Image (tube, rainbow, N blue to C red; front, side, top):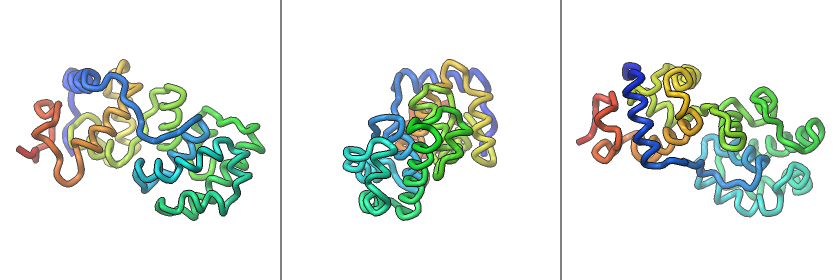
Length: 214
């Protein structure tokens, strides 16, 4: 775990991220907020590319909670069977859809607590949805962000909750909205797990990682 970087260094890092990609986007495909919730929930222990491949046809026929219920458990299972833990995830999608229809009139709620009350939706999923759909500066810490935060010193922490707090506490407010996407994309494509691509990293000189590749 690297030492926490100071304000000026963190600001310089995110100024570079912003210059390189002013409007970073999430890579999960969706057509509305309901399909976004489903896609993010399905992405646990799966790749975005794998989820997109599975949901592309699913969302064409089931883009609302009621349509998903009409498709049924077997139909959902068949569509997402290429995703890890697909049987449990299919059950969660059906349960979630039923609750949305029964308790929310088919409308996805937009508080973190209400989102987290849905089957298959944890804090990370709720934060992704709040950030991507409602433009709330919520920070969803996944393995890429956890690794990058600790390696670089941008947001070190012993667990995901500590990293989330470090992001909220230390990243300047004007970068909070897109911070999660900048970090996840950097962790996914540059600051990768086994052989980080330090030579081509745009924040190499600002990063605290001691074992940089040449």
